[in-house]
Image (cartoon, rainbow, N blue to C red; front, top):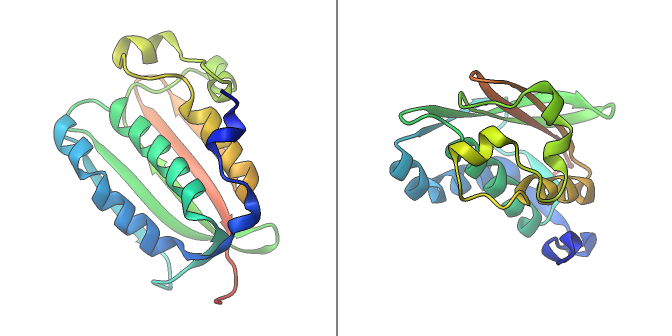
Length: 173
């Protein structure tokens, strides 16, 4: 199937309170974290409890479910996944950076670019967790393009992975 068919086009955008969205989304991840004995910590380094972005819930769901599922599945048991919210300057406007940080198996430098390709999985990923399709990050990449979210990834083998998402903050609606 075409990746674009998984992803909702931009016509249903509205102002979404991203802080609330993430808080409630993390509660939904509880069953997966309990299974693997992983804690998710939300660290809010922001001034305002309400930060709105122009987006649609479907694409946000796809982004966060894929990134958090990866962070959990590729973490060692009893690990912690940090979700960190920071206000930043982005595109000369106020932005929100959401970092998803795990301390799992990590990715070596030569594979970092490839992990966004459809069906690509590193050998380490396949050995550590058999259940992946290799589609998650390519879906995340397309959703980020649609939402105009900048995606950065930093990783080191055996140390873990940090994915950063940069959102433009919209004025309150």
